[in-house]
Length: 296
Image (tube, rainbow, N blue to C red; front, side, top):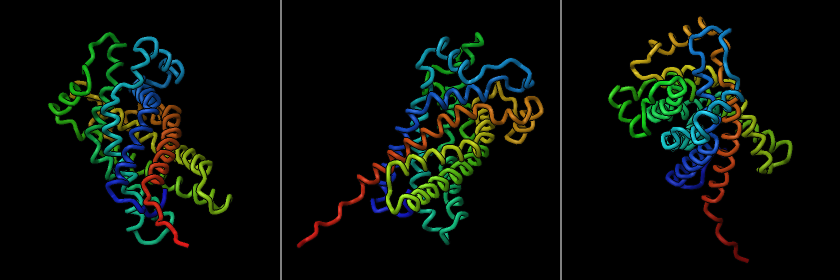
């Protein structure tokens, strides 16, 4: 992503939010699968029977239908409009405002833009996760808590739970964006050095895939804690806060439990980064004003 921008701030935000909503809509099934794996066998010992990625996907498809993979789509789109749009929008401006042009500067810019955007979008994240987790109740023979987005929104308002899981969500976004946006910028710069000063589609592709590895590796533990805190209503709450959630998860399930859903997370993050960066760079190319015609 370029350090500076030549289109207006409003147009840039329209580009970043559009790119994030489109990319997330395409990748939502992987995100849904990740959430179900993160909530599987909660606080049970590692020896407890569990489903793998493929078996979990097959079970959901058989018992809930294909549309279940897009549970919470309106809330997810709203979240990406706020969170994704703001973080990608703010990144180059924060990077320009910080002193120097070093690795710490790029990481700090990504962390600040991601953390701030996550805080703003936290309520939409809570609603989305509540809807994605709700289908488990049907599998357990229990009634669903919510009939749709409006129902989940009303319940979250009634519980005053909009800021549930805020700290791990902000921490996750800070680390994920700090690593992901830096790796994307660095990989693209490296590709330019190798291939010459050319901003190619293949260079953007490799950079986006590299950023996906970084974001999944760094963000998985924070994402697991965030999911477990946000997906519970008041009657199901098991944890007093993020540190209690980490301690109890590790005590009962072992440290590897914090990486539950890693492969679907990467399976979502890699194509999400690919789609969002490719769409965003394309939209920004279209948004840049044309140079004035030359005169002979």
